[in-house]
Length: 117
Image 1 (cartoon, helix red, strand yellow):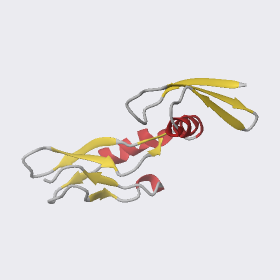
Image 2 (cartoon, one colour):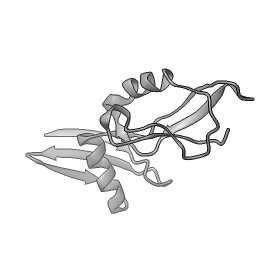
Image 3 (cartoon, one colour):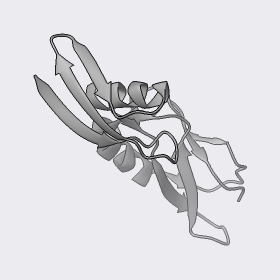
Image 4 (tube, one colour):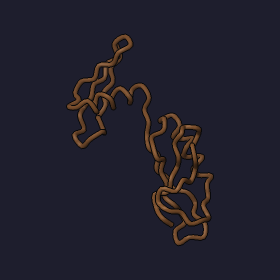
């Protein structure tokens, strides 16, 4: 029987979760809502994160354009994602939400601008 302890980040409560794997099932304890249960299981089986970063911005008032993924990507791909983002240089006007990198690492998730520049 495997056991892992986490702090839930779904809401401000910060419930202390204990996730136990028994056979092919997960038992979550300590959650005060079902979202905590779902988060705990997902964090154990396939953790994901939204990535925030910046890209080079050529010929602008600011040298960097803030960007983020428009959805979570698998945690194991974060380093590769950041490496891809580092290679990008934008030299045109962008608005909030404009796609800077489409379908990063074939995840179905885009990297988008978080600032109009």
